Image (cartoon, rainbow, N blue to C red; front, side, top):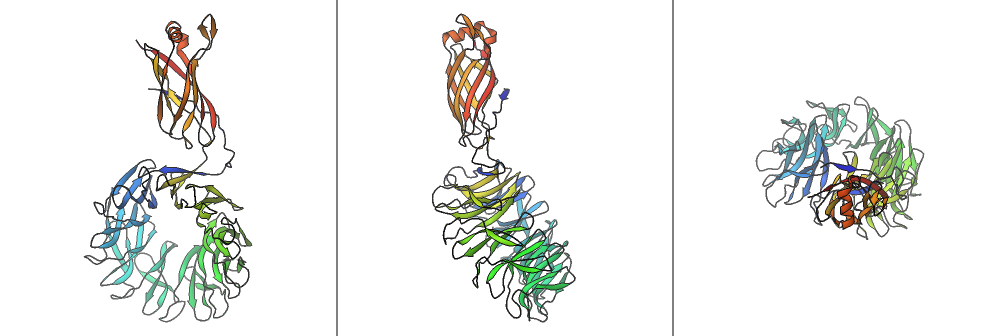
Length: 555
């Protein structure tokens, strides 16, 4: 049956800015208060693949944004396949999954089904697969077996092979810090000749990039981060000790000796943002603080916790062009969110007033506004946002002191999805969307009226209504003036109230009086009706909706 939809005028909620996003429940995978505990959400084509606990143990699922389907019950029954570490490479998502008697192994899925992708250690011994890293359409990972020890492997989804037995025999080269750079994979590994140093592979062979600390002791590089044409890292060398280095794949040089001489600058949290590298380091005088470099000049950004004590910068995340967000500590404010560029750092707020820690984490930039999780004053861990000037609460999804603990922010289908527990649905998927600024209802274009004047008027609240339910009052009248009781007038046939959930319909039973029934039988023009609904929703949006309806008389 055809339906008419007339949108109400837009009414913007005064509590939201034009660019602000608001949290809405996206998917209740396990309806009701029982949680599905979704984790490791990974986009694959038009779907989101994830692990969840729905009607069995933790298994692999997928959603198109509205419906959930089981992809694979890795361990049938109540026992969990426990998929995790999901990584997309090409048209597949790889993950670790449990096999009874074989521990965790490497699996793959195309979103429709799943199968084991590799078995580096055939038989009952676990392969200890880890460090799943995509490079183009291939997946690189570390695995071990009794013959070669722990080495670097790769798969294209069809064949899995060891790249090279870098530490010959059953000993481990222990590959780590896998990082794509200039079309190759750079990583750290240990050999008898070099100790732990920086290596690279084109997928066929492995070569040493630099022996920063010559001999078998090794420089133990880590914290690999690409900025511009260089790969930056922290490494040890006798003399400058553990400091900041970089390489272009051919030449490897010391960038800065933060703690001159034998002191350890120990740079970590390396993060590229707008042509600069930001990191935490200790100069031996001001403690562990925030630094930045353009590759030539390196300087401390700010002494956030003034004096010799450290502010311990963490969660350093690129924000816009040349800025970063981070968590830092001082004895007056505790751990709080900061924004910084090369010239300085400023605190975005004292979300947990006094010396308590708000402990901000998971900063996620969405079109110039960053969303993150933090512990607020008497509300637990909830969702906050910042435009780089100040931080504010986006939503207290779980009222009270426990907190909804939002996490796993993931771009999907034009929105940012995350998981949270609002206390009503358990931990489920939520999404950040523009604030709902409209409210409307719709109804079928025809209203069938029985011989006794009885009719069923169906009102529907569209599924796109984010701040439902739609509620209010309605009046059903003739569309134009018609002759009634001695003169022409607009005749009201029925009125009432309604409350309809988003995506649902409510059937209202109405009954016309005898004069109104005679009018509809005798005057065809009176059968052209207008429904006027005064609608509102939970966000405070209000509108008057006018819908045209044709009365059809039953016999």
